[in-house]
Image 1: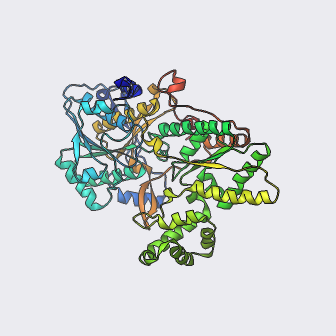
Image 2: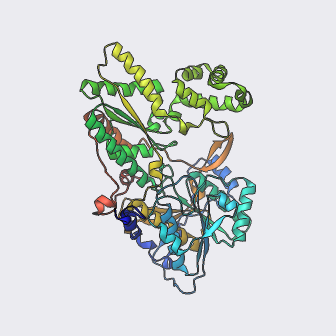
Image 3: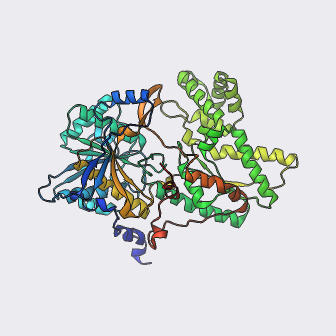
Amino acid sequence: MPADLIKGMSPLQKFRFQYKPRVPSNLKDIALITAVPDVTSLEPDVDSTQKTVLKEVFKKTYGKPVIHLSAKGSGSKQDRKPIRASVVLSGGQAPGGHDVIAGIFDALRSVSPSSELIGFLGGPSGILNDQKKTLSEDIINAYRNTGGFDILGSGRTKIEKPEDIARCQEILEKNKIDALIIIGGDDSNTNAAMLAEHLNSRGSPVLVIGVPKTIDGDLKNKFVDISFGFDTASKVYSELIGNIAKDSLSAKKYYHFIRLMGRAASHITLEAALQTHPNVALISEELAHRKVTIRELVEDIGKIVIKRADLGKNFGVILLPEGLIEFLPEVKTLLQELNHVLAEHHEYVNTLRGFTEQSEYINQKLSRDSSYTFSGLPIDIQRQLLMDRDPHGNVQVSQIETEKLIIEMLETYLGEQKAEGRYKGKFAYQRHFLGYEGRCAAPTNFDTDYSYSLGRTAVALILAKANGYMTVVKNLAKNRDQWEALGVPLTGMMNLESRHGKQKPVIKKSLVSLDGSPFLLFAHEREKWALEDDFRFPGAIQYFGPPEVSDLPPISVTLETTEDR
């Protein structure tokens, strides 16, 4: 066998290194960009009480204007002062992170060949520990258009304690950093806002800029169409779901229960449903709105299984988000009570021997309704609720095998229906969890172009001396030349939420809108999908070909551009 067939990069990797990201016209020449602030300041969409609190927390950075980046400037590339910028990857991986960094690097070098980009290693802890490396052209070139965060590594350390924020200032100023670019989700960008406020209030010249990242798609608002990474991850999952659907249609003997990433919101499940047309897709936000109990949910699925059996179909595909269980009212109450009991009595609970003793003791501490709910859950799920806890003693909801819970309860329901003569089919199943498969995939053309544009936008905001801003590229359903680059103040996205019993400013997560075009289309079609096997097979990500095949944005983003937001 020829050695080049098994060693080194794959043919696709070699080809992708040659891809040149396309950017909107107003980002093609960073040196000629003019920053045009809105006349009015941007305030968060919250009530007056919350605004008062946020103004007090963000005395220096509250109420800044949106900045529009125009390509109509008359600047010069000569005599530009070199920029010494730094970047950190924060939180879970998302396809496109390397392209954000490449976009930053290229834009810095276009400003001045002497500009430098410093990467902090292992996430925010790399700042606190002053662990870093200078990103050279050779390093950047080795990671262009690739998935993963391995150029620097990532981490989930939160920079929110006063001593940590002060340490960040010390490290940034010691290293003569002009700007820190934080690539992360809502929590990471919230921390970016806090750091920006701290630096500004102490007269530090260091700028802080955030970049919206998360495959979950819950960092979006009237400015942010979608976070980078969502398109690639949802397309990877949709390919796998399509493959599973084809297998289901071929073998005709299994129900495939597929749990997808998305603890706080169901954007990925909704996008995958629009891409693949499963028989059932559960949207957490809808179930919470309807106050559907877990037993009602199981009965709803069971009725579809029975109808399909009457049509001679004992197979199908069912999608559900990993955070589903938290949206069911009686389970949500149970989780709250469990967390309270485990926190208040953790020392005694840890002295009890094994699951049986712990469950008996804790059950006595629950309310009657929660005790009933807990006792009605399968033993394996009860065990997960009690034995798998995070360092703070809370239940690790993302670890709960929600599909297993539904399957076991569904088996019981269908057994009852069969005994009463209302179900004559066969129920066999397969379980799947699609999560890490999508987080580090090679980014789609859409995510590559989008991420690279976000990186260039960050440098344009550095030139505009924009502190406490998020990089934004809008109009993503249009051609690349029509994308619009903005800087949006992080404080304009804030609200107050209860965290550990205290009201804290955080960037608001975006849940699936039940009035939005993506959900309304799904709701209109799902009854047909339930019975007719109208499966759609997206196939592998297409990197080449006509634009209508290789360059498409997420279906959700395309639909949402028709809304008046």
